[in-house]
Length: 319
Image (cartoon, rainbow, N blue to C red; front, side):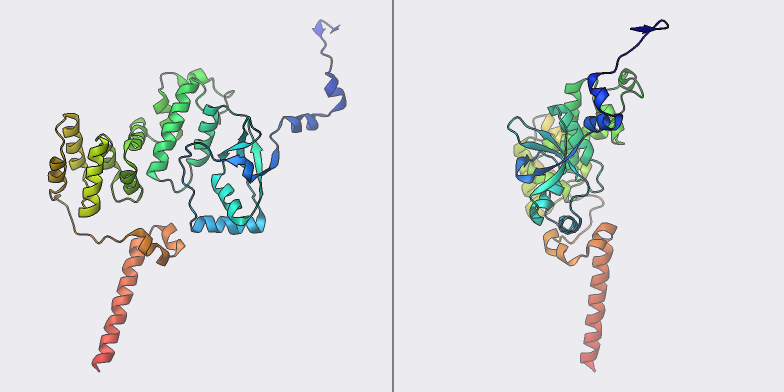
């Protein structure tokens, strides 16, 4: 049917019996209550879920208010679900004895799910180097699989994706999305080549980031030699030492004796330090001090107070 030269569109049958609000609701993502037992963790999830003080606070909040922000899951073929965003909330619900969790269900491909999983977690305030390393690696692989579709969270209608991608590599795009240079992205991904023991030292800030990147080029056997020396002699490799180890490795000349020789050399700015294992002292440090980043100042203040009390005690005994 035409009217004044224009084709007249007839309403669909569904439109005759539903209003716009109802149709919008049907298209919108719905929040469902899903049994936690039906939700599995994301495969190789790179972000740690620890039963720490922050988890305890989340458990208390969920007991009092419930899960305010729904988690994001995707359906699996067997009728269960896979967690995309919300692993810590899921764990807190388990500890709180909550059986169901408010969830947004998204039908996503493996690559889409990986990108959304990383983007949902990478902007957290406290991210360990190992978490960034594996997260960047996973997202980069997903971006390369997808080709042009590099960011599910961008509005593809605002700027043509071809223009966004013009002359850019996936590494550079990943860097721009996370305020990192392409080279820094590559450095983080190199950390995934470290043995778990050395990577843990990086997370604990016992080995600096840049030397750790150079150590990642060593063979697994030589990395274990470095780890053993670090553990028993408490020798921290400097950047220049790590570069020398990498060079000898690439030349096929790196031996256990060479590693011991290089790491045994005193650094120009080497200073004595007191080593205290975190698990021994962590329980004595208030959470507010940890969050403020003034742990060292707090420890020094405690030592000063202790020395002051000891001096007063000695003075009283001397009277």
